[in-house]
Image (cartoon, rainbow, N blue to C red):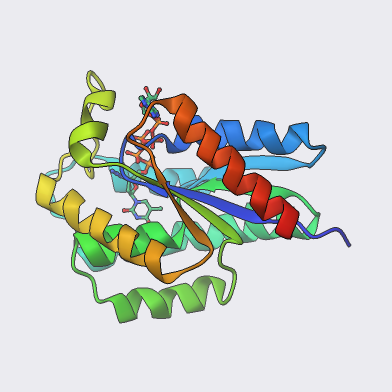
Length: 207
Ligand code: Z5A
């Protein structure tokens, strides 16, 4: 059976994940591939409900472990209903965020034990890691103005130190794993897309 591939797009807020997920899907379709776009948290009706719970601003403090478990619950549903069936049908799945986000935000940002995130990742998806991850790297000071005028969700209200911890974990992971390609997303969109195009083309040639 034709093997589908799993591509994720990672990065902080305003890095350009949504903008470039569409670009990657169109690029793949242009090469005759069956490609679907999806996102985390979310991607199914139930997982989108969990997303709403996670992003809503509320008076009650959300415990970091609760947050982590909700994210993995949504991920389990997303894997079962969308990611695995699509890959098995030979589709290419382009997903905004996956477990690299959990390492960055929950372990890096919130201080959840990394070993716990690793255990949950093993439980929920075993060795189902992305085949390719495009990490859009941009300093918060550059990305934040891109979101001007938009209401801030529960994560976006965190302080600069939180986002610096998130970015540090992303960069560490990009150095550690060959599947993660780091792209300087602080440049104008056309330049960012040149690099994305090159990275996805290289990946397709080597697949
Ligand atoms: N979260 C978590 O904590 N743990 C997890 O495991 C997972 C998620 C999976 C929601 O995710 C929150 O979930 C997230 C972490 C948490 N919170 N935060 N922060 P999300 O992906 O939906 O949230 P987001 O990162 O805040 O999305 P975003 O702000 O929409 O970012 P984006 O998709 O990367 O950006 P965009 O919509 O493509 O672009 C934003 C604007 O910038 C738009 O007007 C573009 O036209 C513009 N743009 C894009 N690229 C450029 C360039 N290169 N130059 C100039 N302007 C640009």
